Image (cartoon, rainbow, N blue to C red):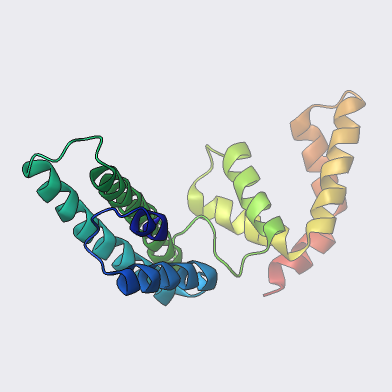
Length: 188
């Protein structure tokens, strides 16, 4: 957009070389952006903030000077200011996500497997009335041996289909697997 605006003769607050260099820096920054590297997001925020200031103030100055709203210079400046503002918004949201991910009480951690994530979300939904601490203990237990809990779940479902109540089916199946569950609870 910067190069197109410059090539049409729009009055941008950048020289020709400045427009080309800025476009190249933006493309390189976009190319190296990686969720695992927080520094690039701060750099992107700096770039978008600079773009918002540069193009936003120029657009306002053009407007105050009485430049027509349909003048290509004003249109390009306003478009670049809005794009920079939108980029700043999304970059800020990304940085907020990185900061929240670093805190211990997040809903997802990068080292967490996708299966653990799904188990946690399912547990939250299924055990919404259970205190969070107990729910976390249960999900940690399930994460240690998901195959065992899959077998337990299938056995409970089979018994329920056979006419048993969910509570009775769960109690019977848990009794049957108490040795494995006990060993699992001892495991760190």
